[in-house]
Length: 95
Image (cartoon, rainbow, N blue to C red; front, side):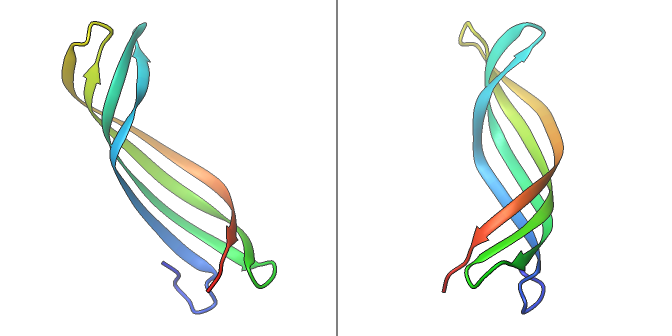
């Protein structure tokens, strides 16, 4: 969502209902699944008619709800990983 008509300052919201991956806890590998959210604030300036460059600060949280170990034993878990990520942005805009 851009806050002004010049489309300089914006916010980003995202929800991933199906996050899947793997992790190692105490030397044991697990397949994990859950969901995640992303919230960001940023600004972009115009390079030319179609390209813009800028930066943003993004907060991401991953909620893990299920873990499957090497023996295929599923466990319900409640783990959360949080991160704060600065990003450089290059966007292509068209109408």
